[in-house]
Length: 486
Ligand code: ADP
Ligand code: MG
Image (cartoon, rainbow, N blue to C red; front, side, top):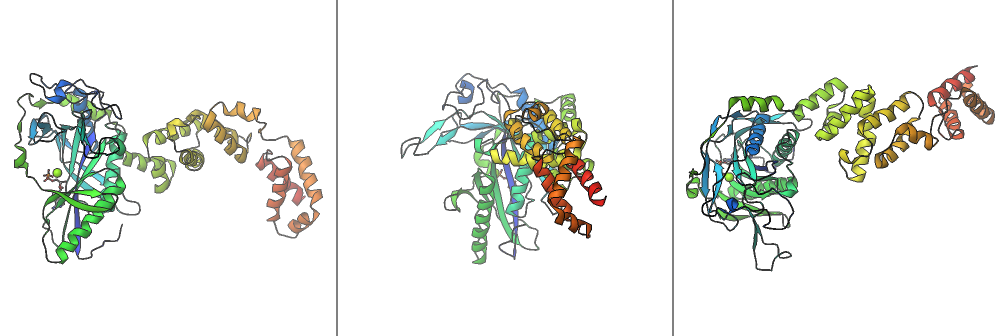
């Protein structure tokens, strides 16, 4: 994919991804899950760990974690255990984070990562566990004073799953492709909005190098909190360079945690790596083990929608789309749903796909909106296309109408009449216009009869011009051909 910068090292990458679960309330408290609101307004005493309070597990969060596990082919364990991960940090008022450690809810799944033009690569998942998020420390000098740090606890206790991959990725591009695939899956099954900008989908990248042809893992470093796909790639790229330089000079990579500075595009050491021992993990005495009813797992399995890769494959097969087009149309579930509804109503899926790929996608891109914001709904698009198919609207007029309908909505047929765009199929008018055009261009008629039939396109254009583009093109072509050969 990308050129490997160091031909004698193999790059090894494993990712830890934290994903917010789409719940109304927090993992163990009734405080709401909010984004972008005033700091410290969505906090419950349970989130603060005040004396005497007890956590109550959010059932919806557990269901969503199961969904995440099933969508990534994991084994869901009927029993899992919540543990305390102890550390001190100002954004963690309890002094510990409730997580799952020795007995996570899911293990052993995989994600198939398809990079265009290459064979799919399988990235194995080590585990998925449920945990609560910590609060946020705000150092931003534009928000707080220059030397100050403020703490916002709105995020403390927000439910998330951590998805840990095996060290199966071999390039920064592959890591980014894995992340995109994982995000698409989680969105498709409604587990998370997975919006990186809102911090709902965050990634730590573990990176090591080893001499090509060897299988033992090299010493890794961990890049923390990479908050965009671009940064993930850039940070791993920079870290590969750094480690390669260390190794080239005969040095050793030291296991540590690193941060990435997007401004300088450089990585720097944050702290020398802590061990699991440092966290003094132990089972949380406030929470009993999580025992799942197998029937619940099966109910959730049965409720899963089609996964993105399956849908893409089905789109190419049933609608005869190229892999590339199928990928475009399945880029989001709402877009794919929109297409399928319009295609079902209209009947001619191939034509609807062409409209989607050209007019709809172009409009979405130009206006920077999602398909849900189009004023024209799928039945409307189907109707518009139907008007073209029946010859009542020329393709050109239809595309104009589409622009307006996409903004303001309304009924395509009514708008067509209002705008005076209905195609002229009036045989008399078309014949008269063809006669006029032939009379006005005798040289073109000569050329045609002399054997150069391409000139018919010119004559066709003249007829369309005289009818302001409203003549039914098929009809014009038929009349022209018969008069020219007559
Ligand atoms: P921790 O939880 O302390 O970060 P883990 O053993 O759970 O450590 O590993 C976390 C991540 O690091 C996993 O995604 C794993 O695949 C990855 N990883 C482990 N060893 C290496 C290595 N040598 N090179 C690259 N990635 C690694
Ligand atoms: Mg880690």
